[in-house]
Length: 411
Ligand SMILES: *Cc1c(COP(=O)(O)O)cnc(C)c1O
Image (cartoon, rainbow, N blue to C red; front, side):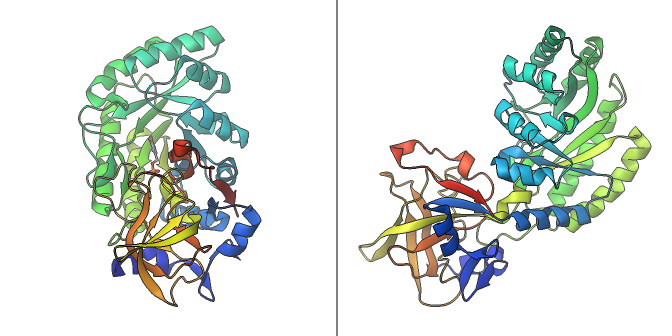
């Protein structure tokens, strides 16, 4: 029995009609017919729009909102986001192409990531995309790319802060890290950036991800602005932009509660005003990935077999770890926990049972849900994994064991 899963905040917010799960106004069953296969990911366009509106309503008007494409790089999703956000942050040449394809101006796109290849740097320079420089060596390579192209690269410095974002699902700052340039090394790098004559855009300070604690986020925001003021003293030119990262998390597991973004917004209000006094007309940007798209998506698979092993019921489905690594618990989780899972034609009512949902792979890791209570599902029924709009399709090893890949639709 897993009553905690029943009270997952995602369940109370689902669109349900006659106890059937709806996505984009259609039942998941009808959607499966339309997609023409299972498994598939489906993302709800309106849910993304509503989420962006909710963020906009709480952050100061002058703060720009960027979408971190790696959370969900499906071109249709990125296209839709292009109509909603002010810019994109990409983490590879492939994502950069997707971002540029939307028509988003290159000036509103930045590329980050350790280990940018020379061809990625050249492509970013050619496009006019801002490169978040992550090492002294990369700064030199970027300057060379600019020289070869006869263009002045747009460069921001990605900082590895001297603080960490506490209680984060994924820590990406503080201590030794492969991301960004250690805060204490940044003044030297800023000096060199000026010598090389690059177009200095500003600073990128990203301290972590998947955070549900307002106190930790506020503390990190404050530390981020303070660090930016210190580093700005050594900048070769006034900052045009300050990317303060994001880190807004969504509830995945039993007992987690949605983030109170209003409280984050109030803190930002104060800090942005102060920032204008300290740094002038700098564009402060918030960079969010999963918070914008994660709750807008479901992963649907079909029950191939019901089987009882020593008193325990398994639903064996056509989907699994190879399509949804995160739900299987193998994408950065230390202790495996269940994503919320429902039987789309019996969301809240009807007979319930406690089952484990597994996939077709010959490995015990292929477990989508471990001993959860859900509506009874027969062979042929759908099973839906909620909170699957981010780090699902593109973050999974589709080739593992050679089963067919999932489909993706935006509805
Ligand atoms: C991964 C990443 C993000 C997005 O993180 P979410 O948790 O999806 O919001 C944003 N910025 C950078 C630099 C990242 O590496």
